[in-house]
Length: 293
Image (cartoon, rainbow, N blue to C red; front, side, top):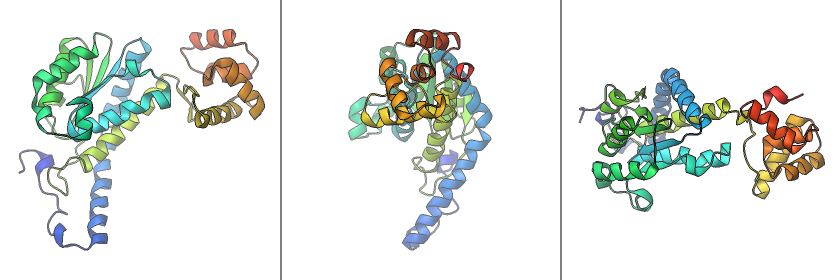
């Protein structure tokens, strides 16, 4: 059971089935919180990943995510949030998930062992030099994840590998290896627990830092969101009020002129035309800070 650190027995495992509910759940929570310590140790590598994926997107390339099982779900969750949070078009952020949409309803283990499936998924993603990929595997040896990573490297794609086992194959292969050394799980081998929690937080850090580097976050505001529903229009108007120093009526008017694009609307609210605002943002590579009064 201890061939991989994630397969070992956690110190809280013994007698787990005999504990009262509150005590058992408290131990599970303690183990989850302890797993997060591994993320802090990985921050220097996570920053390298954020810089690489931001550079790929800034250069007109794609950011792909890949994984299987629980690790794939963590990758998928982060990927799906990018359009709504940072305004990045979905076609620029493909996700390669073992088994595809069908596996989201009925997850099976066999698909993660299929390198031919991984090769087909990689080919369909259309990745090439200048693109980046975040590949996630708790064990660092999942066949699907490994085949995708190998294909990406061969195509000249920058590969960031996130794994929870030291010296694992994915970490050896990746251009930017990220070890989240979370150790054994309270339920041995169930890496949806500590390993998955650490992966989720690590991916959050990467994507938010990426958004900052791209100029899509300013003073904690989502300034690249496109307001296409009532909730987002209200949020966007309040962002404009805060950053441009105008009232709600002026903010809403600026949003109408900008077609719902918050960065443009902020500058329009400060007195620019939409054309001038667009030109200013192009000169600053999409960053608002140089133009705010």
